[in-house]
Image 1 (cartoon, rainbow, N blue to C red):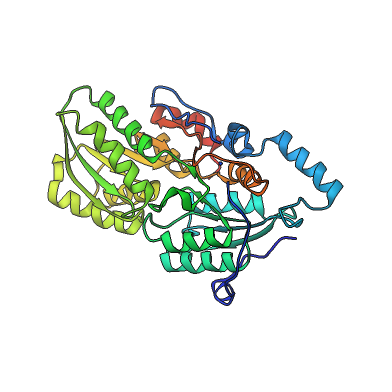
Image 2 (image 1 turned 90 degrees about the vertical axis):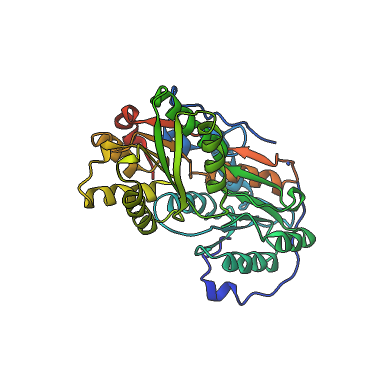
Length: 369
């Protein structure tokens, strides 16, 4: 039996009770620096890349389908289809929409009793959804937390109720004993890879950098900032003129980029945006001011098809460090292990690539988001 996606008003009406039990295995990141492209995104979607640790491979899918035909429904500890909830942080466009589509496409089947909740970018909505998942006796609650702090109490409630919590994409600062594991990107390594590429690109030349950061306290913002700065600050030829928050938002990025241009003008050599959405805002701002984007080295993170078009289009963007949102297949296999009482590793990295402008044309047809 599968559930419908719950609107906010309906999930608020559920009451609290109890749930299932707890568990842990992993695969290490294969992310490399810009010298070597990793796998094309069409392979990520198939689950082939992560068959060892998370994404059901094509063979696994066939086995699951045949078992489902024999037994009508896969069994959880109660003998019914596993009750799985996914609470995203925001059902937006681009990257976040791709993550939601991947998760829903994987779990919204007759094999799962599945509930999806749009977190709407609000911490309090996610907390309410967590409480409702506990009340619904979820076997596994998949959570993409809007921020790292503040989930301790509700995670304790889930653990006491026997609900297994699995983090997708972003992390929490709570004690690791309060959740089963996490699957996502090595944000710190993403930042390092961007920094390493820039060091090679600059080849000792002095450069001034401005950074448009993501949402404060988000795992992606913290990791990309720390990893990038760790590399850049080892090289005396670089100076970070400014790094301010633009909350992964295009409009805020436009405002911040205008501020940077007014304040620093021709001093800017490098523009770094913590996601592609902000990169679009930067490009628009430059065009509105009749400034050629090619005047700068522009680095972005995520890897949406639109930013690849900008990379192909006269190399308006020079580097994109991929952050793979197609986590549904990988999550499914780990969820199956949790339901079966098997252990999984606390940390599970997804495969990702680092793409320079000269790689973009070949990779663009493969982008799925």
